[in-house]
Image (cartoon, rainbow, N blue to C red; front, top):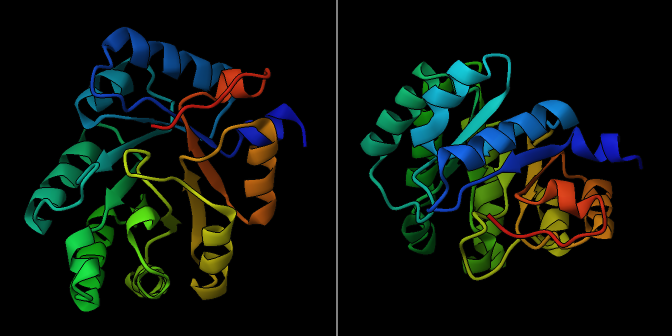
Length: 220
């Protein structure tokens, strides 16, 4: 697999809490040069990035990284992000609801955000490191039923990131229209290729450039 083939699946990411505009600007310029799938940046930078780079595919996060904001708050975040120039939304499910097995409530929230997104892509972060196999399967079903385009493994801020075992589990239980995004746990070029071969359409990493030149990836 060539570097460009890999980069076309990368959400080039900068979500560190101390990121400044210079970091975001560098990320955006790299994404344009490298033709990554998108940049994934904090909501506070979306409008400025869209104004500076109007043709760039911008992704941002909602309910991030803990997921327990109310649905109304997540909807407000989503609406503002789309108005300010985001094309893709990565939302975090309410993990507490998942752990309480309130799966219908989780599905309802995902559906509400998907309705808000309309034709824009919605990726649903389920934070696999906190879930049992039963709960992961339930999230596959909820994401599928709610009509979101992607199920995503991790925020990169939890206790663990993506695993190939979780990607395989997702593939067995998501619907045909749902794609997989891996985040966190991708540490080498070989890992990148393995996750793509396993069925991921996107990979979130903040270190795509160094990763493809022999460096090490970092999580979000």
